[in-house]
Length: 59
Image (cartoon, rainbow, N blue to C red; front, side, top):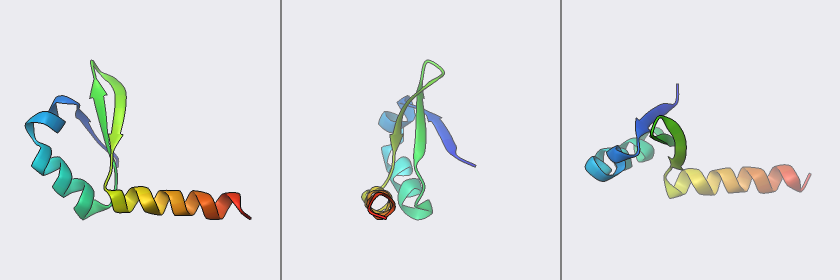
C-alpha cells in the first residue's frame, strides 16, 4: 500500500520521511490541498527505476 502524506510532513518530519524511503525502498506520495503534488524517493530507488526503464526501452 503506498504511503500518502501531506506535503507539510516533508517540512515537519523530514528525518522520518527520509528514514521511511530508505528503509522501505518505496516512494512516498505527498499531497497539497488534498491532491497529489509530488513523490519523494531515495536516490537508490530512483536509479533502479531509471535502469529498469532503460532496459525496457532498449529491448
